Length: 199
Image 1 (cartoon, rainbow, N blue to C red):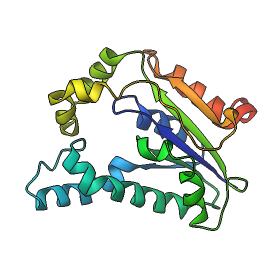
Image 2: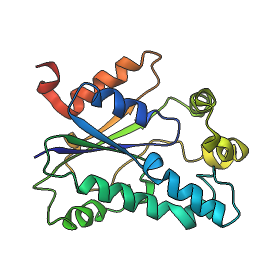
Image 3: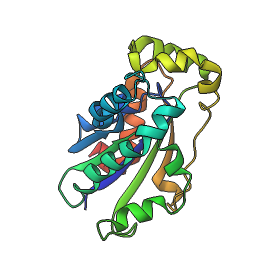
């Protein structure tokens, strides 16, 4: 059975970069919620006369957020049982706080946590200043709201936890602060694959 690996954390933590870097070395498909939702979110926000690049406001969350997670999970669940591992990328803030969420999702395809190996990579940075530096460095219009509301956004940058009923060995806190990205990539690969990472 392939692995279902969640890369969770705030914007700018480097979730997508880490997932893609490990996927380049392993047979894995990357499902990034921002990418999967983008065409629909742009259309929906435009239709409502709102900023099509907004991905943080209350209006965006009301109109698009849950749709994004539904699209992402449907795509991922459809790949359970294939040969490639599945990497899911997104904040998943509300979902990670619900102990029953992952079980309900797997039940949609008739699976359980005993049948699917779920792992969680919680990606973070040393402090809010580093988050700001990383966000500025990626020059994305999708971050405009974050900078305009930095006090509110930065309040969400603390360490994350996950309430799902997983063994502690299946959840890893990864500090992605090191200037050499390969340090975090190696740590993530070792966490996901254990002894396989050096085989």
